[in-house]
Image (cartoon, rainbow, N blue to C red; front, top):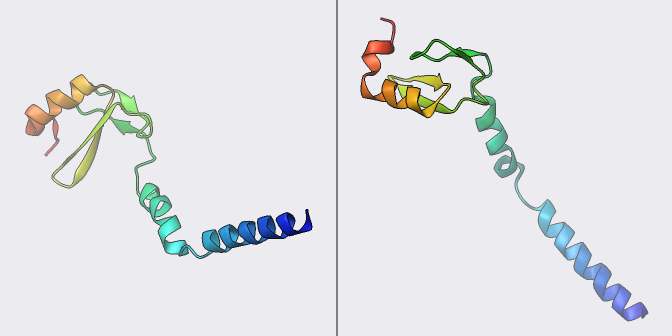
Length: 88
């Protein structure tokens, strides 16, 4: 019984050591990317509805700016003729 306990303890230690060797930069990359997402309420350019970007049904980047939509229909309408909805 002591021998099996020792083998188990060594195996657990090896797994723990492997998990600790992962570079922290790899683990934090998704968090950094997520921090760049818009967090303030946005206006759907098609219908004028105010939208929380985290729960928007759609988003589309046009000329370097991200637009958020309350529905996929509004997003499709925007994509067809974006200049009609973008304020100049």
